Image (cartoon, rainbow, N blue to C red):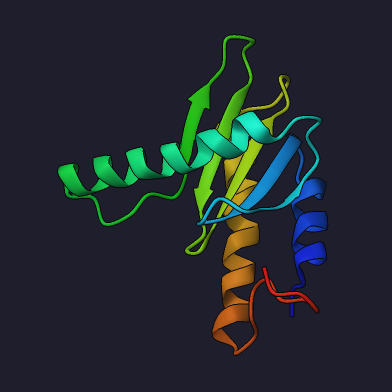
Length: 127
């Protein structure tokens, strides 16, 4: 069973993850390694709403992640995890899609645990 701390440590170990934040769908910040997470934590729900709007209007069944390019050249990835959102700033020397592949693999493993009857993000305190 993956605890919140386990999940965060696994995200941090993925090559190319410079910084990250994990939010509940209501916007509550659960974990991060940013100096000032406020800007990203306000932006992520908007990205989620926008991507769901695109998904519905285009007739897509779902999206895996949404990638936003920044002026400085870094990419920022947003993953919708049901009741959570994971935001990842990609290290400048890394490829956004390659980092996204690493995150998607982690999410697949977490979902397998969840389907086996374990909560994917459980701990003494529920996220």
